[in-house]
Amino acid sequence: QKEVEQNSGPLSVPEGAIASLNCTYSDRGSQSFFWYRQYSGKSPELIMFIYSNGDKEDGRFTAQLNKASQYVSLLIRDSQPSDSATYLCAVNQGSNYKLTFGKGTLLTVNP
Amino acid sequence: DAGVIQSPRHEVTEMGQEVTLRCKPISGHDYLFWYRQTMMRGLELLIYFNNNVPIDDSGMPEDRFSAKMPNASFSTLKIQPSEPRDSAVYFCASSPGPRAGGQETQYFGPGTRLLVL
Image (spheres, each protein chain N blue to C red):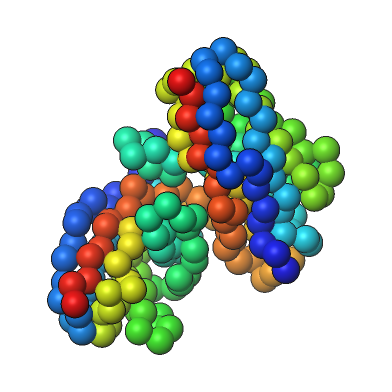
């Protein structure tokens, strides 16, 4: 069973701090990695994707990938209350277009 | 583009009734996915289509579930007969596929909240 694991949280950070969200995956052949944000009662929306080892930055968001450790993370700098949501990690094994999702980490940013 | 469109947005039905969920993908997207989300199991892929053809239905829980995609702009997910344990949020998502440079990004619809009594 190919699994994607996330700490369910809740992760609570003060406004302006850095929020760090982590994800591990079991399939070493996984090739692409996605972070989705889901507000309560809404649908998942894509924040970032990453294919290569290292860091990828987009505004306040940085995705980090370490394939050797089978680990992907999302850093949110200068966290805002509007960042409060559940963050879903998703992994694609590369042989098809299926995504396997983690159960998500609930982030709360306190004003 | 209007994004992925799903209907109905909410459905309340009684056990044993047939439920049909509908989805219109983003125009030009070759891939369509049906997911189910519950607190216990998270977001689970039920089935996905490529160019209207079902590719993988290994996530469909049992024979009570069926999905069709008669054309590029419409898909249905049917549950017959429905049971209380089918209560969940059902999402449809679409993806442009390899024509977009190999990016597997999926765009989700607003979901259908199903409650089976």
